[in-house]
Length: 383
Image (tube, rainbow, N blue to C red):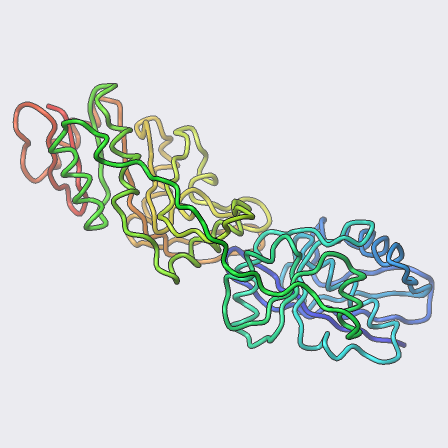
C-alpha cells in the first residue's frame, strides 16, 4: 500500500476552500477510481492525468488506484485539480516523499503531453490559500500575472508537469512572481463631449457623487445613451481592495486580460434587454456563475430599453437594489455577494414616464430636460 497527498483549491462562486487530494495504490485489478463528488469534467481528468504522467517519462501504477478529494461533502468541478492529482499519484509511487508538496497548493489543467494550461478563478483561489496560511501556490504560467496580484504568499508559475517534478526534487526552479506591468490607462468617455443638456448632466453628476441610481427618459436621439456611457468616467479609480474584489469576480467569469489582469477602473456592464434572469443576476446549473449585476460591482450597470426587460428579470433585480446583496444560487454552490453599483435605466414607453412623474416628490417644470428625486433614486425626464 502506498499513499500520496497533494492540495488544491475548490472555487465555489467567489470563495475558495482548500481541497486535500489523496492517491492510494493497493493490490487489485488495475483501474482508477475517483471519489469526492466530482463532476463530469473532473471524471474525465483521469484520462488526462494518466496521459500526462506517462508522456512525461513516468510510470503509471499497474494496480488499483483510488483518488479521493476531501472534504467529501463539497462538490468538485472543473479541471483545476489536474496538476494536484498528478502530483499525488507521483508522490504515492516514491519511497521518499516530497517535503515541498506538503506546503504547496497546486492549480492547473493538464494537457495530454504534460503542459499546464490556464484555468479560471485563480485569483480567488490564491486569496483562499493565503487566508488559510499556505506559504506557496503553484499556478499555470499563463495565470502567473493574475496570481501575482496577491501579496504575502509565494507564487510560482509552471509550464509542464516535468518542470514541477524537477522543482519538487530541488533540482530546478519555477517562475517567480511577476512585477506589475506598466499599463496605459484607456481614455474613458468624457462628460465634456456632451453639448448642452445641463440639467441631465447635473443629474448624472449627482448620481455619480452620491452613488444613486438614475433613470433617463426622452425621445430617441437626445443623448440618453451618451450620457449613461459617461457615468463611469465620473467615478474615482478603485482602491486596492476594491480592485481585488472586482478582479476576482471577473476571474471567475473568465473575462480577465492576460496582459493587464488588475481592474483599476469602475466597470461598465450593459446587458441586452432580452437577457435572461441567469444572465443578469448569475446562477446556472452546477457552479453559480457571476451575472451582469456581479460584474458591475463597484461600477455601473446600464439597462438600455429597460421597459423591454421581462417582468421576471426586473423582479430578480429587486433584492440587489433594496438590500445591496443577493445570493448566487446554483445546483451545487452558493455565495452571498454585495454588488455595490450605480444603475442607469433607459425606458422607452410613455407609460413608464408617466409612472415616474406620478411617484416623483415634485412635478418637474413644463419643458426641457429635468431631474428630481424618487425615493433614493435620481431621475431625468422630458415633459
